[in-house]
Image (cartoon, rainbow, N blue to C red; front, side, top):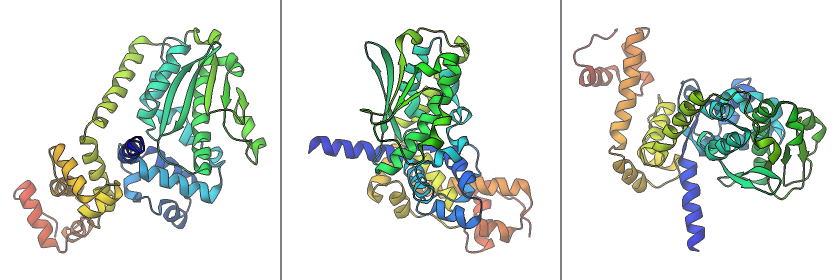
Length: 342
């Protein structure tokens, strides 16, 4: 029972972990060609379209998992084949740079296993060494039904293949991707995407590289760039170890909900906790819900005022104020006497 409770607590923390909205943006662009399709994809995710348009924004892992589940139900388990941007190496940011510029293939595998969850916190990676190979074993970090996990695993495997096809070059056919399920319906569509060996009905989801290849130098080895990329990944990891990450998630949720005002109770529900726990964890980060709300409104107002393209009434509506007078009062509090368009 103690172990089960610990597992549940760990999963709840993962679901609250911030993840880049770039994944969701790529998915919505791939499968949401119309407004109706986008609304259907985003149903239940708490993701607003405005959030997807914000560079550098984050959302909870729970939102991304729900989005992927919606797509799997609508498009089937092979949907990653129609969303190459999601598993492209360019979407992996510092993780791709750190893996690619590692000194050797073994170092690249170690980097991927260590930091894969930093970029994609919905999975866990474990580095394994056997007498003949070095392996990365990949498993879900949160509960997913079988169909969803197979779809997510497919997307992850395509990214892994894209990375190591470049690192191993003409030896990629000696590596193996192993899946712990039978070949999916439509497997003939899948196979042209891989130049490595593919094995189904395996013991686990594993990427296996023979040891004789692991000593190879990376064709993109760059010690200085590798060090900087590792530092960037470690910097991403640091906020996740404390409660400050929760404050950033709450800010993103507040911004995404505008012009509707997100309340404290609903914010707690969206991050998978109780209102009381949310209050406590924000306090541990040295903040509270109301100041976070005020800060989001202030920065959004600052941006609109600088643009100068909206009237006072339009800005008030965009920020969820009941009238322009309330908005003007808030601006005076934030910025002092500032002229507003009438």
